[in-house]
Amino acid sequence: MPFWKPLKNRVQTELIKRGYCVGCARSLSEAERQPYPGDEDKELVTCSCRRVFVYDKRLNTYRRAEFDEVRK
Ligand SMILES: [Zn+2]
Image (cartoon, rainbow, N blue to C red; front, side, top):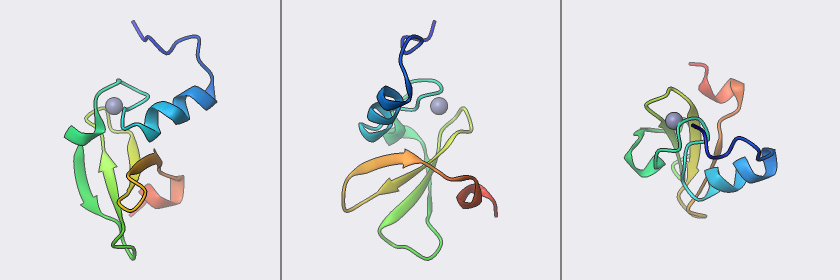
């Protein structure tokens, strides 16, 4: 039962910023982290539902990873 069901993209973005996965609502602080290629101030964060986010260490915020950021 997704609590964000009636919400729109803007609200999803806000959830992500605060560190919650929009797919499963888990806290991204518990997700798997990898170094972001070419940028030490960021981390790639993979949720257990396989959605990928980018964490910005300086801003302490998350965003959805772009398609080309996920590809290896
Ligand atoms: Zn998730």
